[in-house]
Picture (cartoon, rainbow, N blue to C red):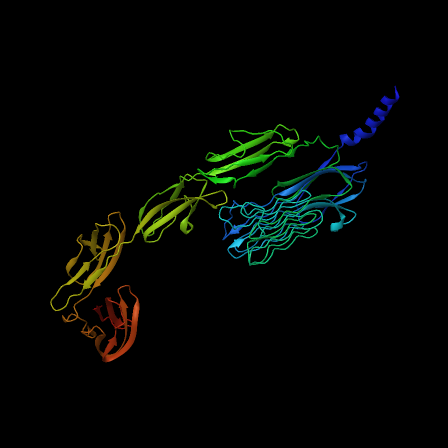
Length: 581
């Protein structure tokens, strides 16, 4: 056996046991520090870690997905360690989404807080992910993956995105698709935090500091900067800046990526040799607008090579040439002739404009339900809080309901609308009752309204049918009821009490009552003291009092209708019906 073979055998004997027992451990977000103890015989770790993304915006309780939070950065490296050494691991939390009237809180481990103008609210900055050795202070960090900035809500066509976290210089926030306006939060660097943005006449957002993203200013749709080695600046009506990444001298084979992680951060530690890495870098692609479009809208991509290579798109797309994508979801990939550049894929979602709407029943009766149904969109937003394809009871009258198309977050898209009308009928009898007097017989005259003409009628007296005409005449004392039904089956029911004539001498012998000619007083006579009550045709007591032999009762405030006066305590059976006009 020669010397070379001997050395190779020794190397395999020493190395193979560790490789056969290689371990991989993943640390997810918990909201507190976690620890990892380096195993025996391990002197280097393969680390793959991700910063957290920023939070979404809000407008009066609705998220608008034309404004994207910044994604967290990624760091891949080999970390030099000692067996038994303790690593302190801080996994970043996604920046909280804004809610109605509330800015999103910054994510754990350095994310800046969003703020609100009451109607418009900005998302919180994403927290950084880092590893610390020999202590838990910020100065003990050896690897940091920056977090993304929070998203704002300002321009109607979108583009107030959070800045991308990660890399040695993190991404600035956006204002109306551009990284130029003073209102944007700036990305952090290796020596200082990102500067906070300022909209004219508003406060400036907080600037980032070591490990901390800046906060969005009060009274604005303020956005939090991402946490990082240095934190990103807070945005003022624009996206927050991203936090920067970092590695110290213990790290080799370092690879930084900016804006790749959505959600909470993550740390993956492996004791084995690193897998072969694809050392290509992502192609940079500038997109002319948001990736969610309306039917018929155009877009173009501008991809550029750092090596002067030839670039080509699939699906017939040409670089820097506008095209109209089809309805639905589609993807487009650009590739480079240089192996140093990775392919880049852009995904688009096109919302249709051809929304339609209908109802299960457009003409109904009071108290009945109907269902509104929209067609031709991903989701639907109805006026008055109505839910698509869910039964509800509309109010009486002619109701106009409008539906708009919406994306998966319930946000209005593409100004596509359709309307349906629901008519709710309520039938009214509008009866006029004439009690018998001066040899004139009682009658009930109807003037129905509401509902759908023509009407049909069903009259009963004391439960027995007496007529199917609109009006009834020559009525004797008793209880009458009418049911009025319109053309679609909506109905109204009313009961009437026809009493004896007040002047015919048919009143009780003890109690007598007669309305005054001006309809203000009820003239009452009774032999002795009487505690009385006046009852309406619903059986409700409307007036009580006492009369001694004779008196006048003020009934001027009673509404028109049928009434009865009788003993308050039912001590006598005498009672008299009367009509107030």
